[in-house]
Image (cartoon, rainbow, N blue to C red; front, side, top):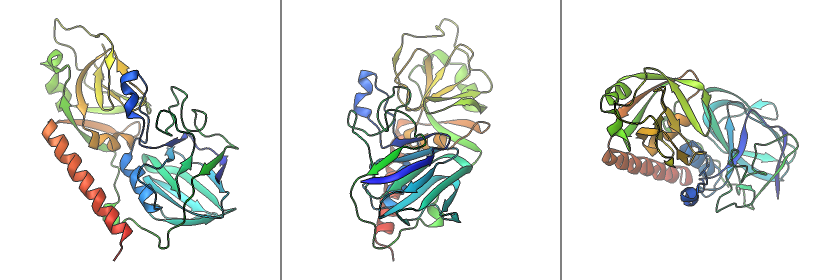
Length: 317
């Protein structure tokens, strides 16, 4: 069934779900929502399975005309102005919409990306097990591209909730201008015996070269030790890998990249990827040395908090 007509697409709005990670070994970028925390919460707020496809909105959002008789929507992630029929509406809670309503998502005031979920989830074809858009590869979502004016988006069947849901203020993430990313050294850390201290002891600015493929940083250069090549034979990469090209300026790889020919000094733990997703050019980044054990512990703690939030939303007191 039809869900929305795109009146204005915003700066970059795409259909995303959790991604197609089963095909990384074949060179297919995983794509998927960059801020999986916001993505999961938006789906919880409308009663969807946590992996249902939603809209990922970057920096400035779309204007959407509602085409279905009744549905719930929810916006989570970056702090953006949200209006329903020209009236201010809250983020982080269920909103009931009906045919003819106009949803407008404005400019991000803090953070970078938000997810808009709708009852049933966005209905686009599965491509290699996912509905996510990969703009670089031109697959998934709506014809492998960002939304355009005039696009009509469908949704899967589903009933609006009997009771609205709202994320408690203490559970709403904040998006500071300066972020600390926990990172595990490697896999080529032996090429930077002297540079690791610089890498973990310095601050870096996010440059305008920042998108779903990766974030290029600017700061104290980290150079290879003598005797190590400045490039390597291209090999698989994963989201969070930090590459160091010849100029010594780090590049954090994200979800639309699968191979790379630069040495990787460290890998940002997966639980901190949402921090990158919400960082904007001009923000400052520091890296803190982490371990695989800490990464596993943080991931478990994050999953527990999500289960607790789900229980609170589904069975409010």
